Length: 119
Image 1 (cartoon, helix red, strand yellow):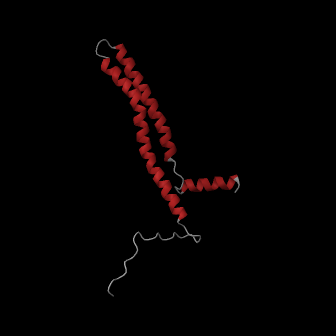
Image 2: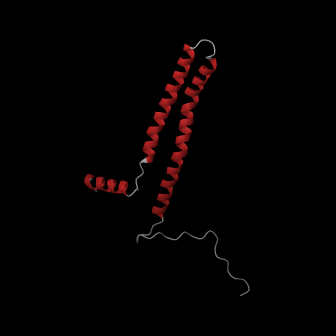
């Protein structure tokens, strides 16, 4: 397959929602979240340093924001990405279950049908 037909197929997949864009957007949002937590934590610490007296709690909050904020951002983004991983895996299962004719094969029954007893 040449580059032009691959590009057309890629655009077709994008327009038919076969290729998902959101996982890439989530990765960008993760890094923006990390940056926001780091900047916010530093601003908390700098703001507390400028105050006289009661800035200790604000310094501790800033440190916690710097340390735990990126962890929270990672966990929240990973939870969303799990859904996309499930979607991709289900698509792979669907693709492996297709017959050469294009129809999906029937899955085997979980329990074989019971034979009628006494008949």
